[in-house]
Length: 315
Length: 315
Image (cartoon, rainbow over all chains, first blue to last red; front, side, top):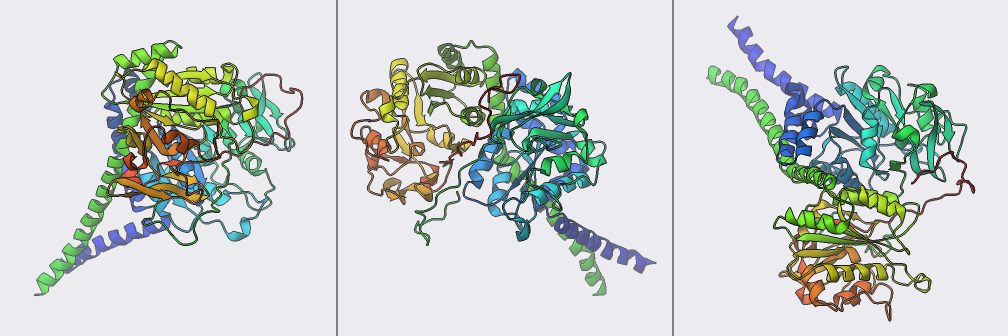
């Protein structure tokens, strides 16, 4: 009897260690994120309290009122696929500068890489934002012009939400590419999304803007200069989805097979909604609150082939 | 002997678990500490929003009200030349999103136009920032490739500072072009500028970065891949000047006459300082905190020649 008792105490902790290690491995989360995930399960309030107590140090009344509102606000989950390139840190810097001002915000950053890069890991840890850092490498055969981009990254983020959020969580899911420009008003508009909401996007489709056409509060068509026959003639930055819609449609994903150029958004949206059910935001889709900006590729023609500087500097 | 052996195997895994948990916790703490830098800025944003609600639209009133609010921090005057184009509002939006988190900040926006445009006026009024809105039209003969850009706009801003600030005011002047990317740390670095400070700039001169080379706290040369013979081989985003230096050198301006491509910065700086007097920032010029990003020109090929939409929408 005593020997069974002691064996149990020898085996139990080893089993626990194995479970923790396997869990870290399979979820491909950094130790940091796994930790905050576990700790948030133990006491979900703890993480929020860190954010809130820091904010409380501001003496303004706005801070106080937004703090008391904060817990009742649905969380905005912004899914940002990203990949290594000269301007990557610059892009992430200005994105973070915007997102830092959005209350109840959770950034899901998905790298197109075989592992977390040091640059992105360090950047996120110092960002001051609540975040989840994921990665999945896009197979080379999918990296051709005309092929949809970031499919694997967006799907991994959707999978993470389905694995880590439940019917008790309130939230809104938005696909925030890393080179677009976002106004703060956009996030206030999308926060009230009940199922799927839509709004205009600037500088897209060869026009100043594209937008859903709205009559009597319903979407009845699309103002676009490009592929007007798309079921949802909308850019990735032009819609948000309630978290519960993502969870209750567990098979809704971005498609690789049979995906035609420019059809990613339509292929995804038709799995979860109909045009007549869309919720128009931004004053019945008459305001541009997000812009499909593109950053120029950097000319590195004068970069020396071998490092000439005496120190290594991250850019 | 056997009992020591079994006790060891009982204790070892528990110790391991404790170590893992402590490790997770300290990593979380270090993230909290770096995050608090940014989160403290969130407080500033909200404070500023209060200021916005209590002020009128005139920039001079704003300046006065926040001077009474004054802390001991020198004001950062960021001079931003801007001009009408498809991406203008998008660029200004992400700039404002960054600047809103910088305490004691005053934005001097100078339009290349014959009068204030409605777009920029409305944008600034809604920005929540302390600002001064100026305009001056660049004569057409200066709008050729190879000619320095935004000379008239920067000089008008310098003139405004000389006319509206005195020896009693503490401040730092910085030239913030509207398409670059700025980290918040950059502004903390430049705030202590006593005369003229310098730091590296990312993605410029055909290289990953350019930077002043520093030995024993003094600038002794330049790491650059382009026009290495420039007296100050530095981008417009790579330096800041104490307000009193601007005021005590009333004739220091950006030059049109005899200006050679890429010499704007050198021509200006040699009027107010010497290389050996420059103050290196950003850890002796080994950190990139600002990036010379460029936004792609927008393709508006599908824009209808006559307005087709039922409403006019600002983009």
